[in-house]
Length: 104
Image (cartoon, rainbow, N blue to C red; front, side, top):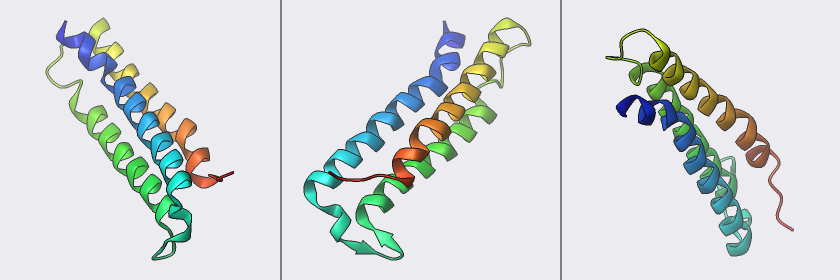
C-alpha cells in the first residue's frame, strides 16, 4: 500500500496547489491585494507566484525521492509517472492563472 501513496503523491500535491492558488486568487481579488505594491509587482501576484514556485520545488523533490527504495517494476513506474503527471499538471494548469489573473 505504501507504493500507492507514493504514486498518488504528485497528484495530491497538484490538488493542494490548485486549491491554494485559486484560493489566493479569490482572496486577493476580494481583499484588494492588487492595490498593494511589492517590489516589482503587487501583493496578489507575488503571493500566487510564491505558492506556485514552492510547489514546483516540492514536485522536483518528489521526483527525486519517491522512487528511491522501490524495486524496479510496475510500482516504480507508477510512482515516477504520478510524479511527472503532477508536475506537468502544476505547470500547465496554474501558470495561466498566475500570469493573467484578473479581478472582475
